[in-house]
Amino acid sequence: MGHRLDQLYQAVQATRPLLRNITAAVEQGSQRKGVTVGQRALLEGLSLSPGATAPLLCAELQLKRQYVSRILKELMGAQLIESQPNPKRAGTYCYRLSPAGEETITAIRADEMAKLTRFAQDFSASELVAYHKVQLALTRYFAELAKEA
Image (cartoon, rainbow, N blue to C red; front, side):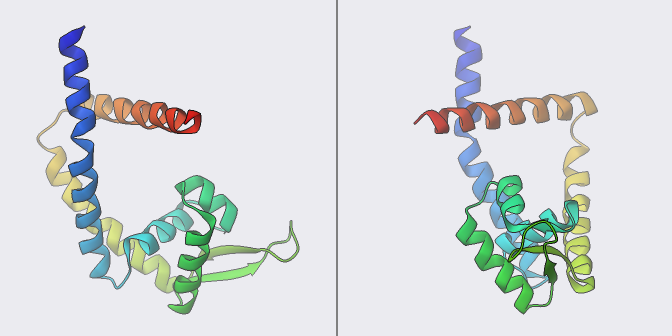
């Protein structure tokens, strides 16, 4: 059991540089299309949940309300998203991608998928499935620990 725990501990420690490097790579790709990492996250969120409200985006992306509000304003100013009144709740809005926003996130994701395709060639499908399973489990586990704190 000790060896397995050592491996798990080392894997968890390796997430810091992994996240830093993922963020840097995503930022580089996003900046080529004129958006920040935060803007990219909301564009992707809206591509997956068209017509989402700000609270829904906060929950889905696990981001704070003030941050989401600021990014939504930036995206509106850049004409990458559109808003319409929320029919379910007066005074609130639903957001969706504009044609320019759809084009932007599609191009960013295509570039990212091409890079991931190159990376994935070194691993079997079962290895990638196992990695995904462990990563999701770690995310849930540490989210629960954070709630307890």
